[in-house]
View (tube, rainbow, N blue to C red):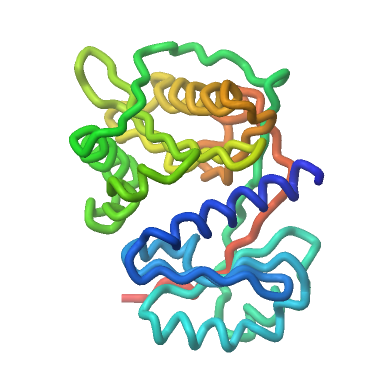
Length: 254
């Protein structure tokens, strides 16, 4: 399996694992797609249909109706060059906002040491998870309740999942999640509140999560990057190996 396929596999496998413990969640693998719905985690990137081949094109309408019934957002995530029919079908359903999301990976040989090697802690207690939640919500600029379900103890108990919190002079300054499945570690929810950005905390906590995964036997780390994080990850040695496009409904005008 090449790096792009390994990254895709760990991303959807993490969603599958989360669906087993989050209330009301659904996950289904079908012909060329994965359908996922997380009522307690209504983030559009992980609610809808992830397409791996054009066989998924005929399933979009049914998947959207299912998401509507479940009360969750519906988007379509595609892999560049693989699903032109899915992309046309998504646009036909009114999902005309197209968001570029680089898929990036790094190997142990390519990982670069960050300039900031401050204190990074692994958190496992309810208090630690609450602190990580507060930092994550602040970093993403969303209400705590929107992402709170991801920081529950039952999620933290999933095998291979680890939460991290970076601290500087007693302040919580950044957070991240690592999820190792087989020999790949996926990096998620890297967030640094605005007042702490530009000091290398995001790079430090990402590198720590990657190294932690490598120490348990993984030989590849991967993530989907935000525009803000892309340059940070490149400096750590990550390289873009695939481009994802998220098809979403355009923002409503006020």
